Each structure stands twice: as structure tokens, then as C-alpha cells.
Length: 115
Length: 113
Image 1 (cartoon, one colour):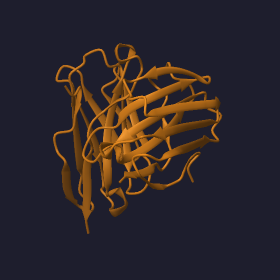
Image 2 (cartoon, rainbow over the protein chains, first blue to last red):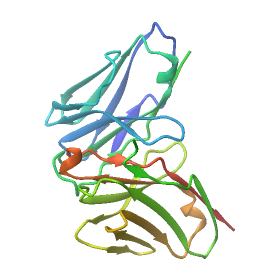
Image 3 (cartoon, rainbow over the protein chains, first blue to last red):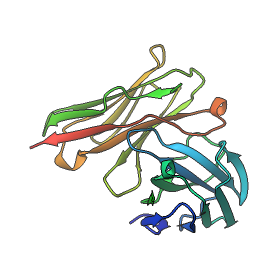
Image 4 (tube, each protein chain N blue to C red):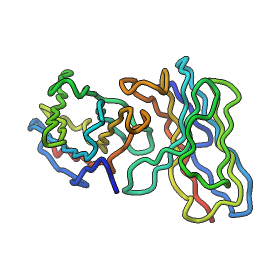
């Protein structure tokens, strides 16, 4: 059983739709992450939040908008996406962002398909 | 330019034998290395890690070896079991990467009965 829950598990949307991905962690962690995983490629870090503050934005297009209302919840708001945005979106959490030796715990991801 | 490379997209091993998964990196400032395992339709799960001050870390059937001079790490699984069939990712981090995990593209391990 994962301590990080993502909803929905699957999402199909048109390019003009607006939708949101949700992530919730029950591990008492202070850092949360959004990753994108495209087929046969390394995980790409999109955003990092530490103690609810955004600390990293890895040149992600503005059509992806994160929100972190508290240390347990993370959202990714989607608007006017492109077909190349179809991918698996993974949420992760860790105790703190600033230590290399803290493993990240992942949710099972949202499989996003853009029509 | 990929800083962490897993050059074998897939590996097939007989059940009971040793599985060896390899990972190369280019940034000598990485100070922590991790292996994750991923089943289909699930997120990656942390498996084992190693600090750059060590050259070996063992946990049950899993051992990670680090060769800093060659900038190479490997994961050994012995004996291999059918449940080990999954995609294995190596990742590295350090102050130089601002503690971000830099990931390899993964190796799909298939354990044959």
C-alpha cells in the first residue's frame, strides 16, 4: 500500500480542456515533487515544493500550473495541453528536499492522454 | 546530455542466477546513488542506495557496488526470482544537482522460469 495517492489514475482530455491532477501523501513528509515520465526516457523533474514553498521549476511550460495548499497535498492544473504532453505523471514525497540520502516515495501515477 | 546512463534497455536472466544491472554517470560531484524498481501501472519503489564514501552496500539479495574512478555503479540481485521482473532505475544526486535526483532511462529485467 502506497503512502502517496494520486488521482485520477487515467485521464483523457482534449487540448482545450482544463483538468487537475491530485496527489496526497500520508507520510508526514515536507517535500513533494511532480515528475513526467515519457516512454523509454528518464524521469523528468517538473516542480518541487518544500514546506509548501515552490523551490524548483525546471523550465516547465505555463500550461502546467502546480499548487501546494499544505505539505500533504499537491495539485497539477492542466490547461491547453499539447499531444506531446501525453505521459505518465508521477508525484513523490520525501522528508526534506535538501538531503541527498532521503529516498523519495512515489504514487502510482496518472496516465495522461491528450487527444 | 544525460548525466546518468543505463545502456541496457533490457536484460533477461534465468531464475536462480545472478542479475547485474549497470549504470554510468558523468558528474563526479554526485554523492548519493539510489536504485528504484518499477512494476507496470505502479510508481517507482526505492530499493537500495549507496553513499559516495562507500563502495558496497548490501541488503538481503540486493547489493549495490560503486566504482567512483570509473563513475560506474551496479546492482546485483542473487538469486534472481520471478518477482524481480520489473524496470530498474538508477538515480544520482548531490549538492551539484541541487539535490535533485538525476535519473537513468531504466533497464527492464525479465526473470525466466
